[in-house]
Image 1 (cartoon, rainbow, N blue to C red):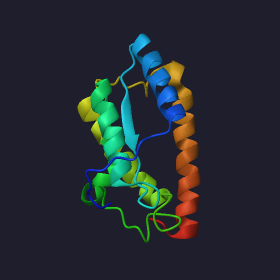
Image 2: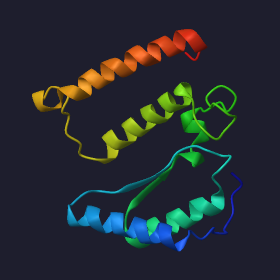
Image 3: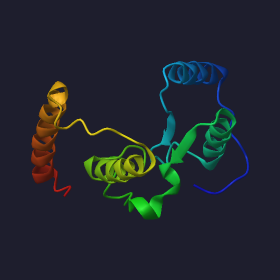
Length: 142
């Protein structure tokens, strides 16, 4: 992304719905984090500026991972499915690791891994690991 002061204005229906979602979250005491996932083929600094201005105006946090290329260590040849539009499992793992550390550092989150009411999370995690383990052997992503 080339740095710019310009802004790409979002469509009115996008603002309408994001405002409604934000209001619903506030009514239910839910913190909001606007997040930009790395996608240089369909994201721009102009879009970043628009979302950043919106977040500042609404008093919500905004994390644009498109600006964190060094921190994420994304390799656009090996960490995407199509050269920069969609992350593959390698890229997703890098983003997930960074985002997890960011959330842990910036939010007071409760760890439910040992809570019986949330054991389906552990089952889903185990299934995810089985799937990604098979994929890694097949595609050589890891």
